Length: 71
Length: 256
Length: 224
Image (cartoon, rainbow over all chains, first blue to last red; front, top):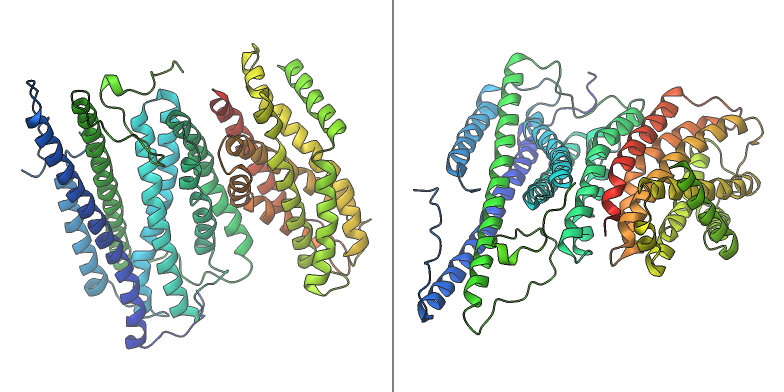
């Protein structure tokens, strides 16, 4: 393969490489953040439903146990 | 249950990615022409490969959805395409960074992978608006599946066409993954595995979250049947939803 | 099946002949676009890559106009329901509509290509014409298949015109690539070279793959 562009000096190239890997990192972190928001919303809703079911006078089956995958 | 195995999967992903990063920066030799900049190859190309496979997988799952009418396949197809779109954007960004480092331009038309990805991105960016524009959930899933199949078949054809058209302009600037020395090959394969596992983990994560929300909604509907404050009416949404309790089931499965 | 397709096609063409909804608009659009290009590029004549590019972009966008209108009448006036009630193979509608769109494209090109030769093209068309016709036909098949599918997809949605073009354009990029690359040597400044076979093969492959997929998938669009 012909050398088309001269190799950048290390400190120059380092910025670009870092940038590229930061992109990858950022995806994962942004996703974690989105999941965190969702999780807190789910927690809130579950708590809400729990209160509602407790309030209800008729006997109800308890909310289904969420299968714990993070035991 | 979607969440089963999620822990194992994510731990494996973390391990493999850590190993991959180590290999990239401490094991793989510096490339002759591009020097340190070439290290981007280990993140850009795996992202590209995984995104492409994800799009095609989304199309295959869509075929299953049309064949079985099981909304779970629609859900899987939706998540696969969604995640692949994100990975495609990442491919474009990392490729652009690489191009800037190599050529001094943020965009180069001579790199067929980047160009193909731009087109594929533009196509799949319409997936969500298409879904959102159809209100009936059953039809939404059906039309989205048709689109996913069409687009999934398009991806390889598009690659072929773009490759053919750029071949004579310049030799590949950003390098191909063949003729690599053994150390680089190993690093590349491990990186590829890491990114693939990352993709699968994120997809599984997403499916579990959606399923949980669906369960919550079903529960809410159940409870609402016994109290005055009912569940909020379902607004328009682009995401497929799973009907979980028989009373809330929107459509009966049709015979194919 | 053949009779159904023939009957549907006849209906399409008759409606088009009577209402003249699509084809005159498409043709006029193409000619106007050539004028716009003259002013936009500030060129009196073009050849080679430039000429191929202008021709294909114009044809593509004119085709979009036709695609947008393809199913509108059926959607608005209940043609879908009537068709679904009939005991016929649903793919017949795909074939009929695609053939109709192909016909519109051919008429479009009968107007647009001579107009292009007259207004903008530097070299003469006469030598290139037979090869050009082959390229146009191959590309038209692809546009017709994808156009029909996308039109069927988009017509039932809320933003039908917008979505139709947004879906079709990326899908048709390989057709543009194949068409433009194949046409460019035909419109060369000095002489008309024959198009490289690879582009004809690409167009052919595209037509085949999407033709088959369209046939397999179209039924699912018509279910309700």
